[in-house]
Image 1 (cartoon, rainbow, N blue to C red):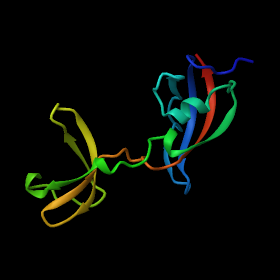
Image 2: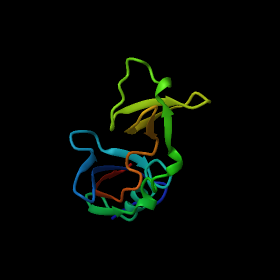
Image 3: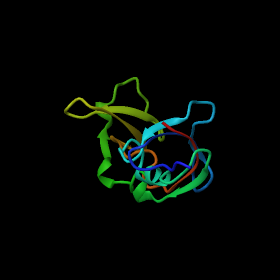
Length: 142
């Protein structure tokens, strides 16, 4: 039976959850996720986790922080002056906003705290610092 190897394009169904059981993503009700193994299209632990799987096989992947989205970086948490926020925007903790860097690239940030003259923004990936668990089923090797 054919096994997944680096360079193969595969299609998988998956259910991703945190260690506390909270689901953060799933392919349920959608087409399977298709990606080329080893090409960096998915996180490293997911990429490595499907190696040697056979069609129809189900596997649970326990992915450590370092092979997921990495640890939270304090460098990506910043104080932003409230004076630079549009007057009609009332920032609240947990609110997701969009920012752009000097090169014009847009990236998401989350409001981590609201203080006197500043709000604290977190530009880390929402899953940074989290070990992840994926239940994966190999549907096809394309």
